[in-house]
Amino acid sequence: MAIDIYELKLKTNLKNPCNIIIGDSREVLSRFPDQIFQCCITSPPYWGLRDYGIDGQIGAEQNVEDYIRNLVLVFREVRRTLKDNGTLWLNIGDSYTSGNRGWRDSDKKNAARAMSYRPPNPEGLKNKDLIGVPWKLAFALQADGWYLRSDIIWNKPNCQPESVKDRPTRSHEYVFLLSKSEKYYYDYEAIKEPGVNGSLKNRRTVWNINTRPFKEAHFAVFPPELAEISILAGSMQDSLVLDPFFGSGTVGQVSIETGRRCVGIELNKEYAEIAERRIKNSNPGFL
Ligand SMILES: C[S@@+](CC[C@H](N)C(=O)[O-])C[C@H]1O[C@@H](n2cnc3c(N)ncnc32)[C@H](O)[C@@H]1O
Image (tube, rainbow, N blue to C red; front, side, top):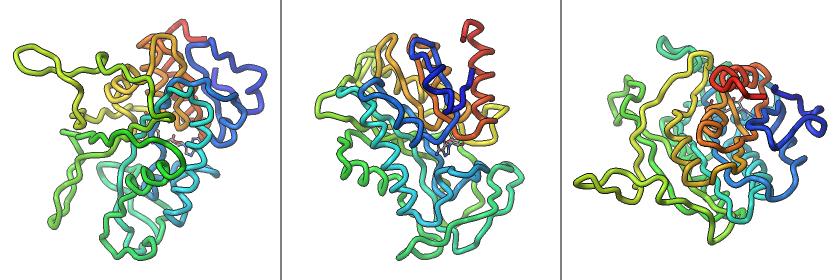
């Protein structure tokens, strides 16, 4: 059952296959002890792209530096609660400056793109500039003590078409692999990919994975395959996996399917309930 942060001490049982906690990940994580998670797999809200309609949401900051600072604080708590040999798999996409328009119309193909606010252009950037948010965040995390081990391109063969005529259509996002220590748990055998003549080769840094909408969620969800690769490489059977931006619960779902346990934190109660229903429907024994 999704639990409110005020019930956290009473009801969280880390032996459960999945605990969903409703609250701000900064606040919720501060209540967890050090070194309990083997890996963290997550996709924070992108800066200025979606309105999740709730106070305290990350991504709605007016200023990109504040957004990066907020995420560094969340991931500092993630680092504390990760085992010393743990890893963070962080999916993040980029965006363009808003051209100082304070809103965005809903899109015929994607109503969730509508925004009642849009942040102004970051200082020093012009209209139409690509902001470079993923690398700003990656460098800020590196400066905060994380080991930045790999940038992975998530290539989306079925990406949304764009009506632009002065640049290529964006069809990728980043996944950064970061570690807490120089040496860490990484099961390279578990995620090998097909090579020549039926052989297997070490996983490459470009992952071709179609996006898959989840019908109840009005926001970008992880394709289960992306979560699965990260979980298989980053954890063992029965490990505890963390997703501090749980959304529709893809990481929880895949954790259970692969024999791991999961803690998911989600600020929006409605989304936490969507995740709970999804996980209960496909795992009748859940809680
Ligand atoms: C990109 S979505 C995650 C989608 C998820 N990977 C999935 O597969 O459904 C980001 C989520 O972070 C949540 N969120 C935003 N700010 C938060 C905060 N401060 N603490 C916890 N969750 C937050 C949003 O409500 C949203 O559900």
